[in-house]
Image 1 (cartoon, rainbow, N blue to C red):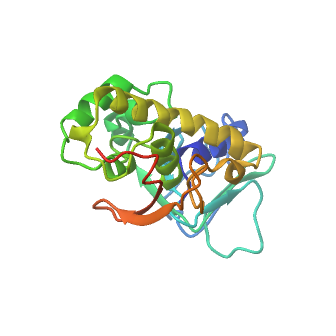
Image 2 (cartoon, rainbow, N blue to C red):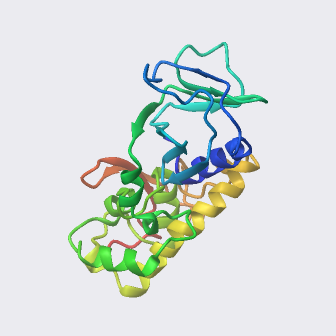
Length: 243
C-alpha cells in the first residue's frame, strides 16, 4: 500500500493540472450525473494515503489501497481504469483503486494536524493523543491513520529501529523522551522516504524492513506479526528495547 510520502509525490506530479479544464472523462467510477467534464481543477489536497481532487461542483476522493496506481497518460496494458481525467495536455488516470465522491463538509472534518507530511503536523497534539492510549502497542499506534496519517509499514518499522524501540512496547511504558523521539522520527523518516523514493533508491536505505541481519549488531532480524492489526514487524531484539 502506498504510504504518505508516495501520495505527496503523486500530488507533485498532478499539480500541473491545477487551473486546467477537463476535456474528457473516463473510467468505471465516474457517476452518470457527473458534470465534471468542462470544469476546472481548483485544488489537490492529500491527507495521509488519500487524495482529494477538488472541482467547483464535485470532489473526488482517491485511495490507491494495496495495488492502486496512476499515470499521466492512459495505459493500454491495464483494464482497471477507475477514473481518467483528460486536460489540454495529457491527463491523470487512476487504476485498481477506490474512487468516491465526497461532500465539501468532509474536508472540514479532517484533522490535518495528524498528517506526518503536512506543514500543519502537530507533534505536541500527537503526544497528547498517545498518552491517552497507554495500553496500546506502539506498532498499532504508528499504523493508526487517525494518529499518524500517512505512516505505513515501512515507516513504522524504520522509525522504531531508528529510535531503538521494540514494536510491541506499550505506549504507557515508554519514557517521555522515547515517546517524543518516535513521534519525531515518524515524520523525519517520511521525508527521507520521499527523497529516496523520488531518486528511486528507497529500498537501498532500508535498515530493518525486510532485512536479514541487524546493521548494528549483526544478529538475525525477527519477522513477526505484531499488535492487534497483525501487521508484519521487523526488529532486532538486541537493539530495540521492549518497554
